[in-house]
Every structure is written in C-alpha cells, then in structure tokens.
Length: 72
Image 1: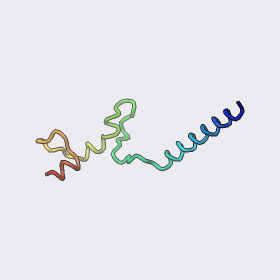
Image 2 (image 1 turned 90 degrees about the vertical axis):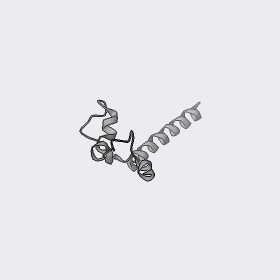
Image 3 (image 1 turned 60 degrees about the horizontal axis):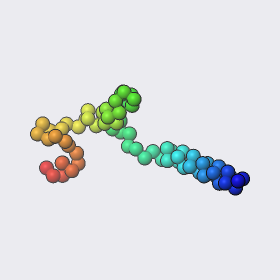
C-alpha cells in the first residue's frame, strides 16, 4: 500500500511540474487577443478581437484567411 501511495505521489508531482513547464513555454500566440474584453464576457472577441480590428474581410467573402488569400 505504501508503494502505491508513493507511486501516486510521484505521478502527481510529475504532472504538476510538467504543467508548469508548458505554461512557461507559452504555446499560444496572444498577439490576436483583445485584452480590453474579459474572457468570461465574450471568449470569441477576447481571442479574435485584435485580428478582427486589423483585418479587412472583403464584402464578397463569407470568411477570410491565408488559404483564401492564396486562392485569390
């Protein structure tokens, strides 16, 4: 029983230290985040707000991105 508890404690400590490492390496590109909008108020606008403000979507397109630019 002591070995099981020791194994669980080691596993939990490994998972905890791994999540800290991931947070420090910053996986997300936050350049398109709009910090003026709170996450809990409007997640879509918080994540995409800056991109929507600086990107002009043509009137004849329903969506726009790098693949549409390549196709044009």
